[in-house]
Length: 332
Ligand code: KG4
Ligand code: ZN
Image (cartoon, rainbow, N blue to C red; front, top):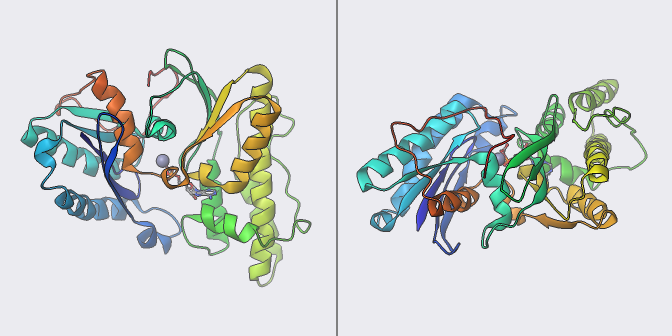
């Protein structure tokens, strides 16, 4: 089995996976509550909390550590002060247990959340929607990644977080907005879909966020119903923007298989719109299990296994953390 460590943002997570994709252990300690009062992740706080929680998780695995064949760790992209905590633990395990070290790209991990208990299947078109990224990708039959579009400013998930913060809702805002939207008046607000007539396939969410800000500023006291109505209109428009750009790409690319991954791919309204689009273009849609859309070490273990099979190891002297990375052209 291999051990995987994820600490790229505000979740400390460990997982053990066997060579035949059996999940033997998984735990995640989320810092959401700690960051909630600030309306977003405070890097310094995240780092400190990881240094407390990672050892406490490791303690649970004390007895099985001698049986571990390799350690996989997220080294990019993410908050440097968070990444470094998992990286340090992984390096030490590699040295003290004398086992190989595997570097895993967090976004590649999200892609492997589609194949947690089975062999991977490419080519595949992918919508990646997380707190830090919003991209349309294609993985070809040689497992090479091609970046087809990305956001020019905020990410999809981040825009939910920012709108939630404006309405004094807890962090992370995605699930809060989704819940409120269910009670929203469908007719009250009407936001403009970003870049609707722009020929490019890239995304922009900052203008939409500002439309919300303007509407909120017109209200004297923001009631629960106001919040729900805004949440509904915002979510509808953000998803319409995604679907509009995706459809542009579907028209030129003939995706036989398409998937959505990342924390925000847990949004049920987005999932249902993706189903409609894929049905229209005769594309088979795959989605990660809801539980594994958001950050977790299971997807890191699964991505790590691919590298383990390929003996793609790295020494503790050479592994680096990379807060930002280029995905275009890498093999996964
Ligand atoms: O992948 P993830 O767990 O962390 C990153 O790698 O960034 O994604 C977290 C993001 C947050 O911005 C969160 O608000 C958003 O995903 N998110 C959602 C939903 N659940 C999580 N956004 C919209 N609707 C949701 N249901
Ligand atoms: Zn993520």
